[in-house]
Length: 482
Image (cartoon, rainbow, N blue to C red; front, side):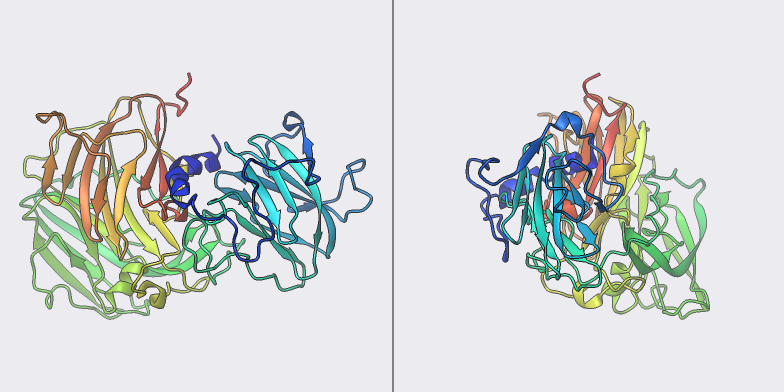
């Protein structure tokens, strides 16, 4: 199943919510007819989809093929693939202005179109391929899907002429309705690929006294494809390492700020009870401190840097999870995962996150993610056996946006949220569909999958799903039909 189809499953509710919008953004020249387009009336040639393999384009522009309609008149061919809800590629480049044959291949599950600023409209049902000649002006142009709700959800793109400044996007760059976010930070095609963060929860530490070393680093990290930030970390990862103990244990953390760092840092364990102006004090590069505490209460807890401004240190990657089990431990299950929801407010490529963005009274993050990287568990699903018992430790570190943690197609039969316990097999057989977590709140959820298949993991605040808060739980081989 294509990644775009999975995104459609997760964003469907959001599209219903935005469906009352016109779907026509400022600067667009056409809207979608109420009963669908008449291909003949708008001069769109419809190709037999069986003769057009559903493959991603290997190049943005290719020479017009011999014998292709209009090939003697056009300068080249642009291939755009449509998925639910996005285009690939979104940004195309041509060498010179003039007429180009545009081929639109709809590989999504629903109807989509490509509407250019000059009014040219290519509309295709699911599985169809359509084409038309479009005149690309010297300043470039933009395109979008004019079906209500699709452009705000992310179906927009640009065509740039080499050496010319691209035209302004045809949509409001402050519209935060869907993926990918409009930002002043341009994607870098040469940015390293993101590194997948291991979601498997670690085993509980043995013994009753634990000496842990946490080295704080400042390094580059790709937080989403094409976007690299200079992050601050605990233990060289974002999020920092999961610390798992039991009630009554003593934890002694040696916190080190290497001399090569530029910033003072600190640490605040929400699972501890210590004075703020003692172990939570900031240390300069080259310094270290020992933070000792006793795990008095069970739960899923946040730790983070508290150095002023704490908002910036958290938004720039300095956070992690502590799991404190009851003294008697947790019942064994088949699989355990640790999932941390957080936000990225992009700064310039290769620099720290934008504090001014993060300080806005109405939070508008560029990405909302699980375990530090946008959409990483779409391509690398959390794999389980069908019917197996799954436990997920969930933490929302914010710093500012609430989470509504939900896994499509499942019901949580056990939930422990901030000390409140929904017990499996309770009288009345109550269950939970989503767990609401404000910033710095955590929970434990348990579930089983009913059949082989893919189960999208999202925040049910669907305006953030397309911004990276999407993953997959894969049961069995992921195919419910075999």
